[in-house]
Length: 251
Image (tube, rainbow, N blue to C red; front, side, top):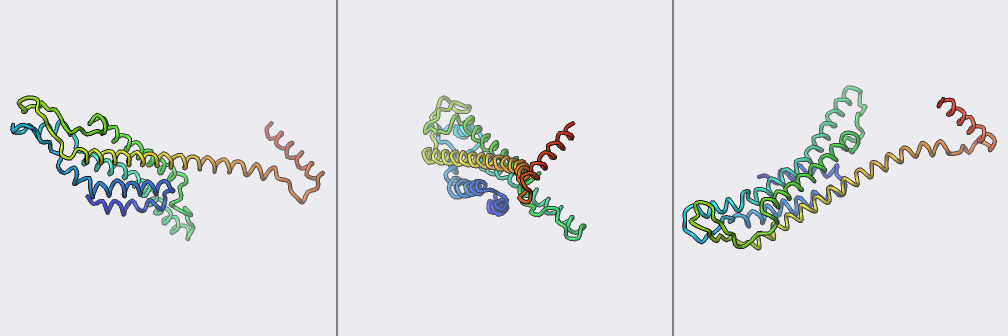
């Protein structure tokens, strides 16, 4: 899997992300992708169980029963699915740039978007949707791990009686403590990414509400502001005329 290519592709999202988005991307590639590639794959390379029986196929069946989906493969799928929503933002910006270029060529240099990467209109909704998908994906994979393995713990000894095992046999996991540490590390890093996405969603929504409130407030303030060139009597008369005009309009 070419993680470096994915990293170079997603690095372009930094130009359109907030501070929270940049922190999220750093956490993903430093504490998740890098740890996954450098250490986790080697730790989980010997996940086959060792059972106290020589019955052919017993250890393989017990391994399949204990680990229906390998942790390392599950994490790889999680990293792929959680980074794909960022491509939605890049695709939307590229679409804007293409429209802007066509509009500029047709209208003699007049631009359709002053800044195609500015989070306004449809791009704002696309960015917000990508954050929501990231939160759902990370939370879903955490739930899957918790459901499949009944928590985030990893026992040293596993009792197995699946066919073709002759009876209840004891099976042992190689380096269970080290594997458990990596499980907890990936769970905590996923939780941090979820928290950063939620913070970014709150920031975007709060900033948009604040901007809309200021846009509504500024015209009202300008309309109530007194013209310094008018005298007191003139200002009073102008206000009365405005009120009368509003009353007639309302009728």
